[in-house]
Image (cartoon, rainbow, N blue to C red; front, side):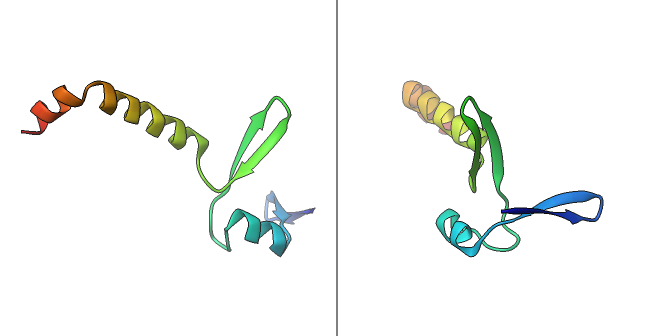
Length: 71
């Protein structure tokens, strides 16, 4: 991969094989997360995934209360 200048910023050229594996195309967003083993590039927001897991747990635990509130 190659880093290029884009105005006052820098950009990275991703080969079409990588784009296909990530299932992204021009204009899509990618998320970069730092891990203990380096960096993780993904098309989905890892923070959103964690929030959804937390919401699902709350909905499962408080199902009765949520049913009453929905009425």
